[in-house]
Length: 612
Image (cartoon, rainbow, N blue to C red; front, side, top):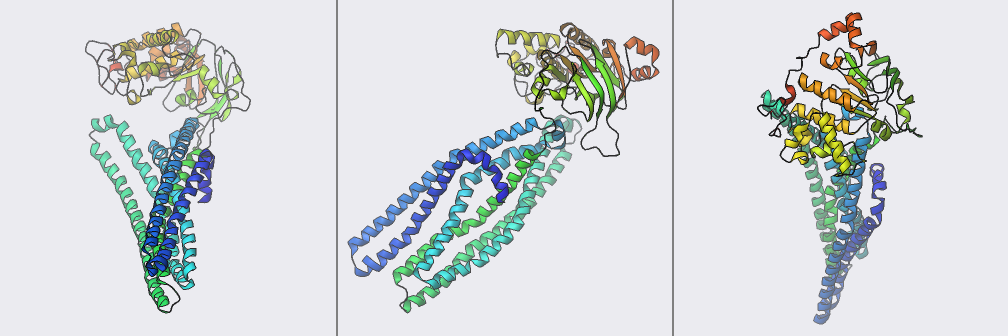
């Protein structure tokens, strides 16, 4: 447990002085409260026994003053620890999110989003609450118990011994509780992450659930997970109830035994009434520190589990990293070469063949090359290698003769842009989405607006000007307020605005009708005349516009040539083209996106009202 919590030290180090100060002040408040029984003993054995009422008033004033001092120390404790604890919370969240951004695509393919979200929000929040309250109170209460029991021996060794012996069952029960609660805490937090994943998947797939009438199925799956979490939480509650029982009953039983022994000692003259009263005042004061150990130990265990879950993400290996001494290619011409490239995914078994096997392919600067092949041949995987979304497992991808692994990721990805078939937009304005890759442009500047207009024109995304707030319209989560074709064109405009030397297109126009695709492709060829383009093609219309065509089969390039040449000489290519058709994507699909926001009388649903 200490080893797990110690991992927080780098993030908590700036807050340590104030956290330590808070602990010292909290301990001071406890020590002040322990002085009250001593004052009461003095009042009973002194002024009360002698009948000196004036001195009694001084004793009452002393107790009141001690209470004020204790309250002041409690206030100072809160003032000292709350701000630094929230700063630690911020630092850990920031580091966690930064780690998520650095982790490779393979990590995100394996981890459910709900699990990451629950770690980011719930687990880190639990750590903050423990640092600001649980840790300090646990340390202070343990010290209070030790000091308090030591003071109990001050009045009589028998009373102190009885009280100490009575706490033995409490420590045994606590050890048993810790072993049970540890596993329940981890199970509960994992189940909470699964539940969050269930909600995330259902919200993202709400259109599919509604279209197929499967809301009841999603609800049933959610209910099962919620019931599992509820069952675990009930088991945790029963464990907590059991430890609370021991923490409540043991101090009461100890006080009962000590009362019997104390009365007997008073009758023997070995203890005064004031001493006995002070003893029980102190024993009563120890009831809260002892009773609080139950929930403080449970908070400690929950926090240890949360720290472990958070650092599982920190411990995940970053497979794609910057080189120790990166090479700057300057202004590359865009010559892209796949040199004996092989690739296999990390989770593939030894008996499975590589997804890409010894592939050789070269694209000349400014050339547009279409990549065609049957489903599952490795086309999409190949498009992820130039920008190092995945690293090759054999061979090399070279930009202007330089292995892309020798460049920094920031430099490489500024020279190689990629547009995916399934576009992702962010909850931001159209302007912010399109200029996402242009950090060098000042927002709102004349140059930024020029680049924005040109990118929208090339992508035939003029519909953006007709949205309710024009280019300042928020597109909503993942851009789902737009149609499929609109999302694809904005995503294409984004990569055009980035002006890369190499542009990789993974069938980014699949939601467009043939005529719109032709116009967009023609604009791309005009504006990106000096840009090398690798495009995964699924339609003959796309293939015909390319300078050359590469045929891919089972992870290898089998033929490369011009479209007309391959039609004439390659039976494999002719057979492949016969499976493609200009209507296989459904003509006019640009407006038939998820929102169904198509404006009558327009070709592709790009008019007003496209925002759901």
